[in-house]
Length: 195
Image (cartoon, rainbow, N blue to C red; front, side, top):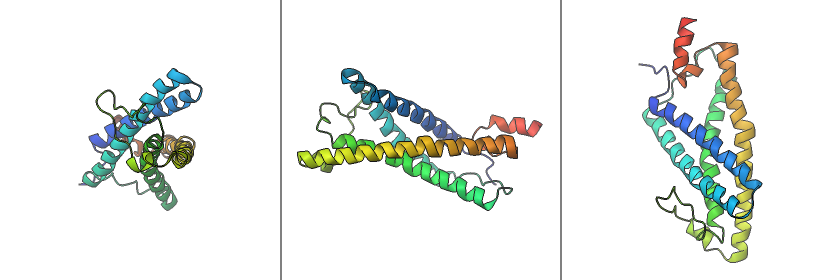
């Protein structure tokens, strides 16, 4: 039987990751305007949220093997299918690279043991030891490089992938008037069926 929508787990993970991503990005932006204890407090929340996004993304990718995505509509042009698959693939990749680069950046910080990645008061996330054990100047240089990568990946997601994803969803809903969006928002299928 062909799936007509994503699994419930995939839908929940999609929206949970999306919400956490927005929250984490807002915290990252907020931290840029802060100093001292206020900045540290915001970043100490930003860090475990990023790790959570990474873990949930790994879970979502794993679930794709168990519950494959529903097929794309046959009415879609080949270029639309390729673009959609590229955006999805890049999203998955960058939702792993973004938090991993943050984890690596923090691991290369001289302050990692003073301000560890504390997972919501439950435990401290481990450091990437090879980065932490680098000599001082080299570690600082790696920290700066990783900070640049982290910021660049965030910009690609925020200013590139998210707008493409939203525009694609809006195109399906309002221009194509197909059932694609209902695969991720099930209550829309009833509306489409009634139309």
